[in-house]
Image 1 (spheres, rainbow, N blue to C red):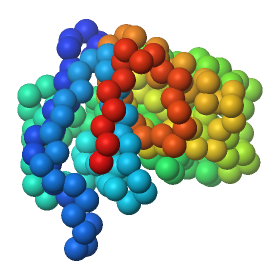
Image 2: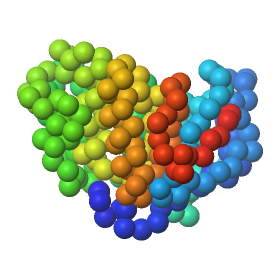
Image 3: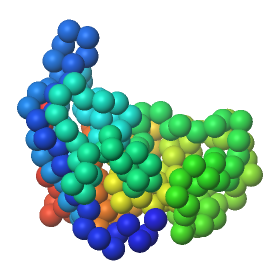
Length: 210
């Protein structure tokens, strides 16, 4: 919701460690991301980038360390944290048997609400006119753009994005980069991975290699 941008938000990670089976993915990891900043995670496949994003979204618990949102541990905040974060993973998390509009309506119903209309969000991602089409009929690129529309309607301050440019063409990449730039300009935070070079204003970006 827009009012969440009226204050300075900060995501802090302290001495984080995580294992996958017997493999230690990372340990003693500490960093902070504040309003208007983008943290770009880098590293080889298997380095733990996706795992770290899931930890930051509250979808998984770390083996060691703490994650704070505005100086409170996210494990203690519950809904107060989840209404401030949006996670976009490799999968779009869409209901294929629902229409584009119905998918966005479900997302809004499960959140704190939205100040951005579904019609505007679909128009912004170039899906105007597809409101009542079943998502199972969409191309891979259209599904990805609909997933981006979910970010727009939910309008949370923290975006956690795992390869957001997957399945989109050059125009789609430029569109997503535009949304990210706008999100940062109004005080949002972004943590993301990308195999593509990102065309985001350099003043916003900090790189972290796992």
